[in-house]
Length: 467
Image 1 (tube, rainbow, N blue to C red):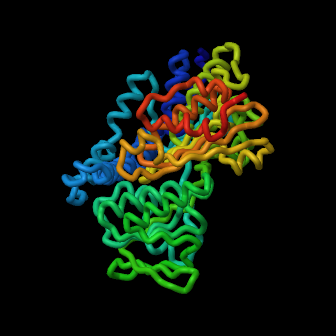
Image 2 (tube, helix red, strand yellow):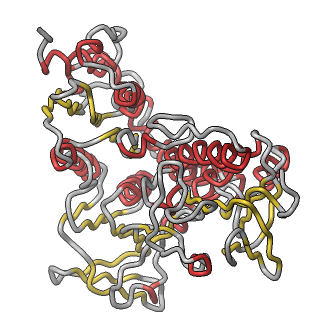
Image 3 (tube, rainbow, N blue to C red):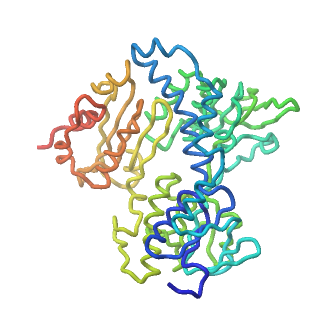
C-alpha cells in the first residue's frame, strides 16, 4: 500500500453501512478510517431499526397470545409501558457507542471523531485537520424532510429520532405520514396507551400492493388508531402548556400532546463538500457504488437513493468494500451482474418488511411496477389465512399473499405477504427472485406441513400446474 496518503480509504459516516465498507476493505489489506460526528453504529442502532422494533415487539407478543385460545385467557392485562421503554433502551446501549467503537478498533480500522467533509480530490477535512486517501466512501445516510407547513417548525415536532428515544408515552399523539415509520410508530404508541391519530395524504404504504395498505389500515383501526386517509395539516401550533393544535385541510382541528412527523427522507449530502470535487448533489453511482465521473469517490447506502433500507445499504457496503479493495490492490474487478463487486439486487430484488401487525413483507416488484417497467406479467393471490399452518399459528388468522410472475422467463419477479409473522416467509421469495428459479422448478420445493410456507404451494396451484 502507498504511504503517500494518510489512508487508502476514508469512509465518512460510521453507521452500519460505513462500518461494512471499511471492514470489507480492511479484510483485503486496505488501511481504512471511519469519520463519525455522532454515535458509531448510526441511525439504525440508536434511533431507527433496533429501538423501533423493540417498541413494537411487546405489543405484537401480547396480541399474538390473545389470538390463541388458552393463552388468550392468560393475557388479559395491558403492556407495562415503562418496562417496554426500558427494554428499548437496552437495545440502544443507553445511547452509548463505546461497544461499537471497540469493534471498529478490533477490526483494525481507525476512528476519527468529528464532522467529515470533502476538501478536494482524495481529501477529507475534519475540523482543522485534512486527511488524504486514495479512495473516499460517503456513507452519511439520509435525513428527515420537514414539510413547509405554517407553525410546524416552531411547534417542536417529534421526528422518528424523538419518537424512538422517547422517555414517556404521550396521552395523545398525532402521527403525520402513512409510510413505514409512520405506520409502525402509530401502532407502537397505540399499543403503549397513546390515543393516536394517523394522518396520510394517500393510502398507507402506497408503494406496495394496494391490498397491503388496506389490511394494515384496518388493523390499526382495530387497535384504536384513528386513521385518516387524504388528510393533511395546514397549520400546527404549540401552546404554552405544551398542547399541540393541528389544523387540517378539511377545516377540522386536532389537539394532541405531541405531533410526530414522518413524511419522507432525503440523502444527507448537505455541507458534504461535493462542490469541492465538482460532483452535483443529484449524483449517480454505478453498481460498484462508484460516483459517476470519478475514479475514487463512492456513495453507499441511503445517500445514493437506491433503497433506503439498512440491510440493503449493508449489502451495497459489502460490494463497495470489495470493489474498492480490488481497485486499490490492482486485482481483477468482478463487475458483471451478480458479481462479487456489484450490488445487482438493488435493481430487482430489494426485500423490505413493515413491522406492523399484520406484518408486510415484500421483495422485488409490485404488479404495477412490473407492468410500468415493460414486463409482461401475470399475478396470483391467495388468502394466507386458509393455509393450515396459519390457522394453527393464530385463531382467525387474517392475511394475503401475492406473486408477480414474468411470463417471458416464467420466474417470480415480485412477492408480497401480509399477515402475522409474515416476515419469516420473505427470504424464500428473495432467493427465488435472485436465483431466477423457474416456476416449474418451484413446484419441487416442497413446503413442510403444517407451516405457513405452504402458501407457496397454494400460490402455485392458483397459477396452474405447468404443462
